[in-house]
Length: 155
Image (cartoon, rainbow, N blue to C red):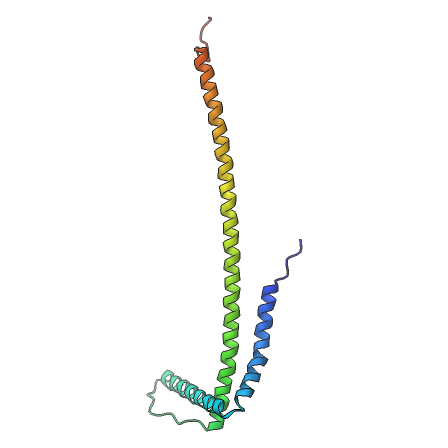
């Protein structure tokens, strides 16, 4: 028996793979306009400040001040952060989507198992009812004959 091709996994992998060039394109387009350039510079300065603080704190020192980056470097850092964020969000979205698919598959499997159990219970109940009818018939026959099943002695 040949295993089914995991189309959904391949689709998720394709989306994640295509997210990288898309993120690169978005970074490039955002770098062209003054409004988005300011936004990227602000993002770059913020990420620089956060990573610098974390680095200094992790080394065991107190942070006194962090010098801002040059606007070009800040814009580059902001664009990199934007691109990585897009790739991360797309990858996370694909993981959540695949998780939802697997949960739906598990739910259907459990539903089928419960349905089979209900069918088995109904079949067993039918057999039990048939045995009750047969037992009642045997009891009626015994009462009608009014004599024991096993005779002891020689009658």
